[in-house]
Amino acid sequence: MRELRNKVAVVTGAASGIGRGMAEAFVDEGMRVVLSDVEEAVLRSTTAELRDGGADVHAVVTDVAQVDDITALADSTLRTYGAVHVLCNNAGVHTGSKPSWTSTLDDWAWVLGVNLMGVVHGLRTFLPVMIEQDEEAHIVNTASMAGLLTGGSLYGATKTAVVSLSETVHLELVEDGRKPRISLLCPGLVNTGIYLSGRNRPARFSDAGPFPDDWSFDAARKAFEEFGVRPRAIGDHVVRAIREERFYVLTHPEYEEHIRHRTRQILDGENPTLLPPPGR
Image (cartoon, rainbow, N blue to C red; front, side, top):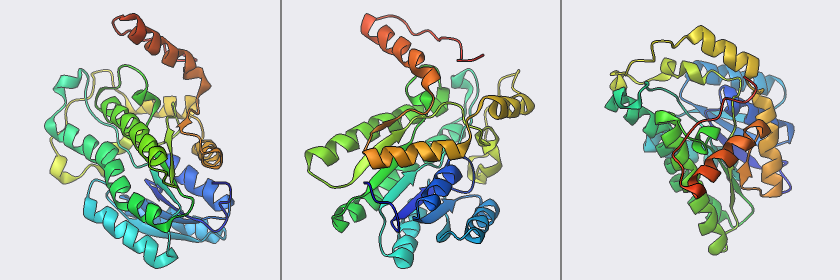
């Protein structure tokens, strides 16, 4: 999908973090962008800032875990712009405890609902529209390096599922001769506020498991700020991947040896072990 100008992109989790980075990159390409997020105040602020800069953007408050919200997002997109050419299933949350079996069923329901079912809802709702349009289109599913490596607990389990689902959809689209293409975004550490996901946790999932005894929000913030890549840089990676119709989008080359390590252990029948985090 080479030409992006005047095309319509929908980005979930767009108010901040990677989603905002994607939205900014799309705007700079001359795209019209629908920003969706569950955090209404930040969504409105981000939308206003982009509009002040001359962007053609539209905001829709959306809980991706709710299929009715995704249906409303699609309806609003089509009413406003008449088409959708790029869909970024990006919204994600992080929670859970260590060891993983101390996580509550509410932890599981929340993380699965956003990180996995949010992608499922996006695919089921938007992909038929893209196919029916019968023109170039592209989907970007945000997974994580945690979806390719060992030891991600609840978050990693959902992201591994997104990896498998995305690979399957890619094969189905190609084998059926469909025009839409798909990319799988697997970033490492990015300077976002995902470690503060609890701010958006619904009341219906109030039973939260304990964080590890050594957990510190201050330490997490420092790590994300010190080692995390800028979200806008991730957005630029995504633009290039869409233009190249490239499936795997790996934004952190320092994790390549970690992927090789896991692959070797699988092929050699070894028990899982972890390498030290890169650069630490």
